[in-house]
Amino acid sequence: MTKDQRPTIYMDKIQGKYKVVSNSKLCDRFWRLEFSAPSIEKHTKPGQFVHIRVNDGLEPFFRRPFSVYRAKKNTEVFYEVVGPGTQIMSEYKKGDVIDVIGPVGSAFKMPRKTTKQIVMIAGGIGIAPFLPLTDVLRKKRKDLEMILLYGGRTKGHVYPMKEFKENGVKAHVATDDGSVGIKGRVSKLFNKINCDPKTTQLYTCGPHPMMHAVQDFAKKHNLKGEAACEEVMACALGACLGCAIQTTEGYKTVCYEGPVFDLAQIIF
Image (cartoon, rainbow, N blue to C red; front, side, top):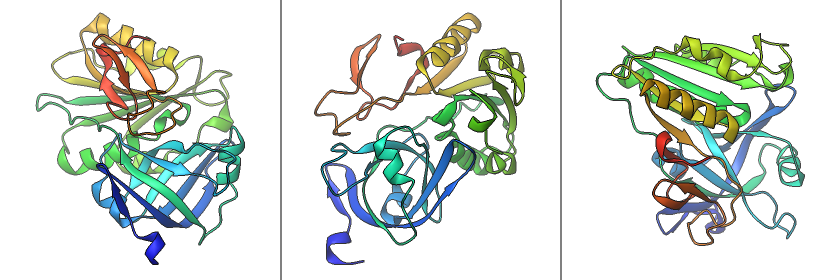
């Protein structure tokens, strides 16, 4: 690693330049970018994200935030090509060098000792932060039943989820058009949830309407849960306030005070 590639500490974050290991398409819509960043892999916890500068020029100007999809041998992020920034990312090749700040933000809390079932409810790329969560729980809590309820628009938005299954996760899928799994919203899968508040804990990430439905379900059944929020952001350091969301405790920044919040606190 050359001098200009050495990681630097920026506040409590690590900024560095790292080499791309691979960049592959997982399904019609989603990609996985893998890069070697030992300083990030060492410190990342489930639920945190990285902030990537996708181009050395001025377009696009701001970095892009991505949940850490895995942080083992290398750091992996999960993304969908939706604009010029992610289009540039899709063209990365092995050996390219990228500028990354991370790990950023708060992490998921581990389940209570009385918890027997954890349910991860995700929509679209909101599935990304849950793989590292299952990596940790597989080692720490072999007694847990882990369930993933996943909603996508079409078959093209659903990938095999091999890593989740290898971790012992039971995956259930719903698509808007019924091309995979059951037809309809992910809320149609809520019957897979054990509604005992003493033994079940929820985690969710995805579009606001979906997480609002999860919040309503949790409130109805007195279930505890956490939500990882996705917002457009500029600094990722809590300074610009561009990613602030409304909570029962006032406005909070997703990048610095989040992205993980108590599910009951968020005002959708």
